[in-house]
Image (cartoon, rainbow, N blue to C red; front, top):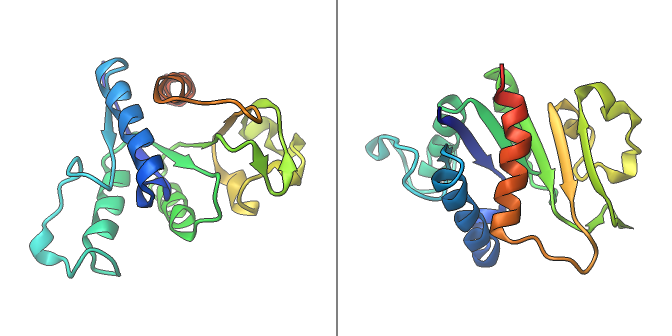
Amino acid sequence: MSHSLYWAGDRGFRSCTRWHDEETIRILTRRYHWQVNYPFDSSIEVDESRCSGFFGKRGVLRERCLAGIRNSEIVVAYLGTFDTGTAQEIEYALMEKKPILGWNDSAIVVGEHAGRELTASQKDLEKLHVSIMPMNGMTTVIDRYVEFSRLGGKTGPEDLAAVIHREASQLTSP
C-alpha cells in the first residue's frame, strides 16, 4: 500500500540541498513506495493559468504547496532553518488536520553543538529543552520530531530516506 507525503521546507531553494532532497524523494518513491508531493517539481499539478508568476500570493509555488498539503496524508517538514514559509506550511497542515513529522539533520541547533539522535512525539515534546527546538514555539505543534545528526558525520539520501520512512510510517499506521 502506498502512502502520500508532502515534503515541506526551504531546502529546495539551494542547489546542494535540493539535489539531496530529490535523491531522497526518489528513494522514498522507488524503495519505500511513498507518493511524494514536492513543490519544486511537477509532482503537484496546479492550474498555472490561474497563477501569476512563480512567487507571491497567486504564484505557482504557493499553489503547489497548498495543493500538495491537501493531497497528502502527512507533512514532512525540515526544521533546520528559521524559514517562515515552512512555518506557514505547518500551520496550513494543522488547519487541514494532517499529521506533521518535523526533522532536522543539523549538528548545530540554536547555537548548541549537538551530537545526539533524538525522536520525540507529542506526549514527550514538553520534556525537551527549548534550546534544542530548531524553530520556535511553533515547532511543538508537530506530531513527531526526529533529529539524527552527529557533528562531523554525513547523512546521505539513503540514510535520510530510511529515517523519514521509519518515522512517517509511525504517523500513518492505523
